[in-house]
Image: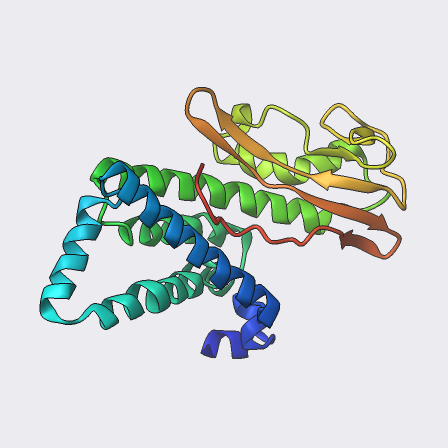
Length: 248
């Protein structure tokens, strides 16, 4: 909170938080209720618990101690809020004051994120750490390109905004496509934000900013936003939310 005050914006802006509308809260509660009923019905029909053994152990321990209400508060309230505050990106904003700070910050946040999942085996914790690092590197390159692209620069220079930091960290070969392309009457059209395009980007164009790294057989990371190349500078058209919500 102190860091947010010192850096200028208000606390909500610093943490990247939006106050949900009552309608959205109601839809979420109803959705969770429907999902809970569905899972319970599935358990009953299959005569089998779909919950992990460690989840059942925690529940039964709290039930025996008469502390189910505290378990509910910890899992449903405290844990989600804690993870949101820790990993939404405010740590990144708080630590990074120069480009050289980005990698240590990404590694630290990924380490904390992986160690917060000690209920899993060490192999899974390692996977979470590696994915966190990759995601952080792509996200940093994507935001750099999103802020730096502008009309008049060549497609090659625009592509380099994201490609150079990814290549500098040893993942250049894993970034196998161009940074982006134009959006208009067709999904893919000119101008191309590519290392082979020396033509200037026209003012007024709408382009995608979508760097990624990929590892065949294992997975990959891509982050995309749409940007309008206005005369005064890039204007973000998509929501710009790049927080990692789910691994698939």
